[in-house]
Image 1 (tube, rainbow, N blue to C red):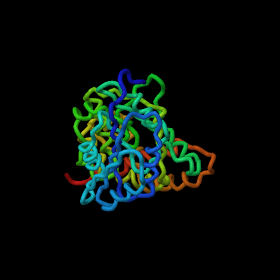
Image 2 (image 1 turned 90 degrees about the horizontal axis):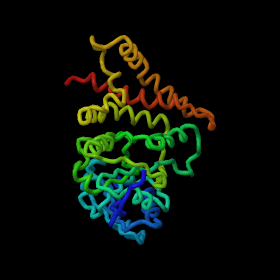
Image 3 (image 1 turned 45 degrees about the horizontal axis):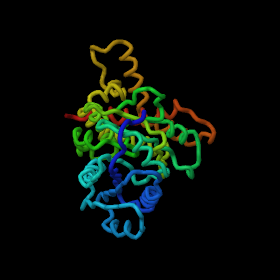
Image 4 (image 1 turned 60 degrees about the horizontal axis):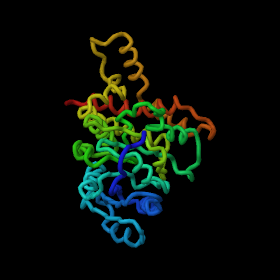
Length: 319
């Protein structure tokens, strides 16, 4: 969907980082090569890892305006993005990760998606071309907003801060990122739900492509999702209850006397399958598949079983 109206007066690109200069340099240099973009500024937030980052960024001798905000200690990605929002001067805020390389028309495509006070524009995150292609890479590149067909409504849970932009008035109305999310995951999903509740108009900008420079293996991805399920998903469900059903978290809950037979059978299946011995084995198998083989059901199982396993463990903790 395209925005209708004037392009942004100034765009602020907010990038949290935690000590990975070699990847951040590629991010910044790709922003310096933008074509047909409105005026923009870049705000990098060092989350307590690199006191020398201001000087490092200065020595890159970039033509674009780059400012570095420092945290004295690590406070997490939600807090880092909030610091970037506070420092931003633009009427559109673009969120990007520090391990991305964007195409020359990235900001131009984001700008074209705006034109209203409720715009939420989602770009496409693809795996960097230098990373060897295999079935898992192709699967990852087909997720999120890339799954949405033309004319279909974009679910708020697809809001990912690796590549998105939000109209300043809408972001102010929704409020900043919730800093209770202190580890990986959940803070952008919760923000997506909050933006939707405040009238956000979610749009897909196909030309706003960012290439992810650092793709985790299926096993590493599963381990991270398992931790996410145990630590951050309970917070997400409390903050955004609709996530419980949309992410099928209700199936990880104990059997209830009010459950029907079909629900009971599904809960039993989840209890039996969401164990590290199974999803860990499935992740190892995914890493050993021939390069040209793509098994989406296997990758779906690994991802869902890992975070449901973590969530089930969280539910077992005494409250």
